[in-house]
Length: 465
Image (cartoon, rainbow, N blue to C red; front, side, top):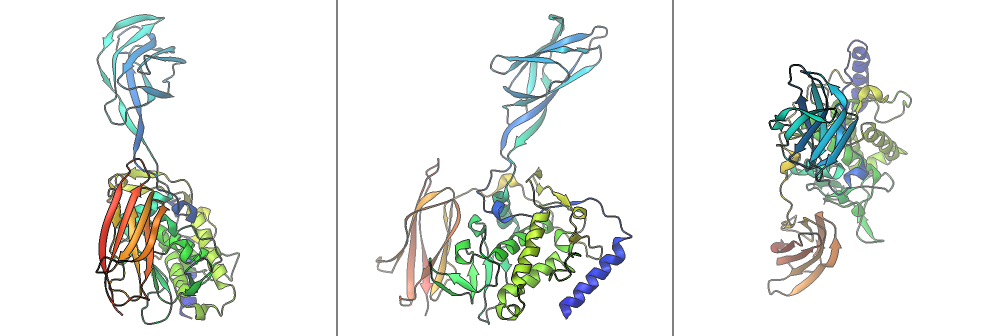
């Protein structure tokens, strides 16, 4: 009843205000599961630069129809010829001669080149004008160009890491489901960036079972931390996770828009489908409603097809504002929106929403924490009988992970020269056949990338039964 009341209120508010308030074509941004599973792009890395030079015919009387100049960086390509019909590049790309355009006295020609140079400081030296192949006037002084770096754009993997490292706070992390330690129900806490969280492909359902092997399962009746897709493959889980990341990114100022209704406060209402369970809810309320459905299976299993309906709604929201990843700025990092809410028939502005105090994106994508091989403390610790060991690989590598007792005797091999991709990794250790006490876990990782980095580390953990 309470949810229905909220729905009716929000729909009424929308109807009252939508006809009287003009909303700008503000663009929003969401993410899709496949993109979030990609290996991160090195966003912000400068590949080369576009440099603009303005050459002025500063004579008082004569016109010219040719230009010669030497640059301090090699030319990769011509972005704008400045109206010249022919440009010849010579001397390993550093000298050009342009002809085929008349430049009268006092006029200028603006040429733009893509140069090898990655930093500011591109200059044209020893340049002069031509008239019918004959030099006119003296050689001019050094001329500085206007620099525009060409940088690698982010992708979904970049965004996933940025949000988890710069926005989401530990130890809270990102929660999917309803947090409870008193009931035998499931919920998830994501704390680290790991592209193996995505993509989910199995049927939408509640948190019913956890995979413990290729064919074995156990009830999903407790907290699960940083689970890879193989632990609980559930398309609805992946879609909710992706939408929560998009809402968090917009609230923090890492995605557009920054000056109007936040993504999470838009209203979902599909007028063509009155039976849609999300109708009338803001996106924040919708994901909260689905959190309850994921955790409290018994209550929602009584509603036939509810999980499939939720999955359809969340999936279409994530697709609504998906698109190319273009950074408005890299420092601070802000990702451009893709589509306006007015383009999406089932999403609507929310004039009744209280303004979200965006913290503002104060972090640059350029100053990410350096990638390292890192062994983290197991969690929980102390534990009984299972715990999770997390570690980070700066590059793909071959990993061995073993457990020892206080006497230095090996009691378990969790990984044995296993080839793993880079990023956050997690391994579950079940000590149900061991006695209480202190144990050690030791990792050896050999990088398979160019740096051939190595990790050798040992940490202590405590089993309490």
